[in-house]
Image (cartoon, rainbow, N blue to C red):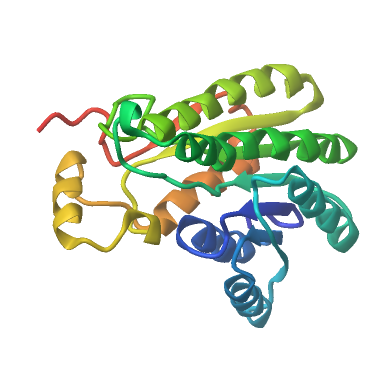
Length: 250
């Protein structure tokens, strides 16, 4: 069991990649603190994990709020005795439009959810991991803004690229404390965020060398690797799990 006895925070845990990660990490022995905005979905996932012999607690809230990041860590410490890892996965794409036509409010919203949340997560998760003698943090970034620029996604690209830069600095700062920090860059994934337009999915499948989109569990398993001791010498990386999207030109 790759996460046996480890306490892990997952944000964006109510659906998609985060929900898949919750179930997979629990099966791998993790004690989980689940975060997202929708309490009813978090409760259902927590109940499912408990019914299958796992351990999980949840706290609904908004990752834009630094106080929420702190409360998730406090819950991990009070319920499970500490914090060993975090999959900071919550995110939004925002409005799809060129930057000259983009509302200021959209820019700031996308930055708050995708990038500011990473700052708050780090601020409270790293001190908790120090107490345990180390830990592992994974941020969900994107190939958008790293290997490709997609029209209309300027705010999203900037925020996700910012996460990679922050990942590298955090890894350098906290490596001596045995805290590993990595970014995970998924390709197109069949999640609610991707929408349900079949035509769009057909086009997006063509972007990938594998000619399909990922299942949420496939991205969750990549995060599992980064959080586990199998990745004990991996830090500061931007790990691409994009089905060959970045290298495919046909």
